[in-house]
Figure 1 (cartoon, one colour):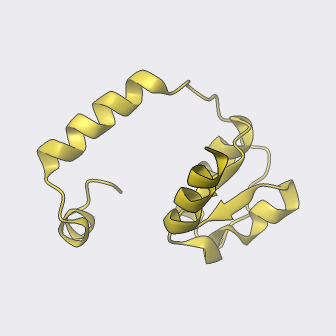
Figure 2 (tube, rainbow, N blue to C red; figure 1 turned 90 degrees about the horizontal axis):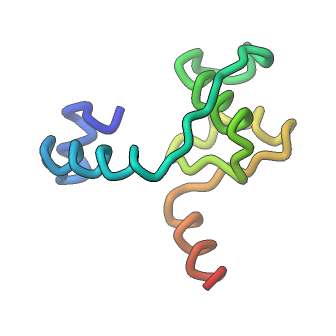
Length: 94
């Protein structure tokens, strides 16, 4: 979704810059095996893998502009934050 044309335009990013960011991010993350134990949980079937990855990866929360599709995260005590709230939390931890 990061590379969808409408997302690139809305965020004023370039495809090349996004590719560089994703390459750098890939060096920092740990792979997460998916186990399809909880489907269906979300309103949007394409969000199922996002929720499952967060749960299987033992994430503290999800950062999304689309929080209404992740209300099921509360069942698993998984936080769901818009980007601004996530950044506020990060700054407060310092």
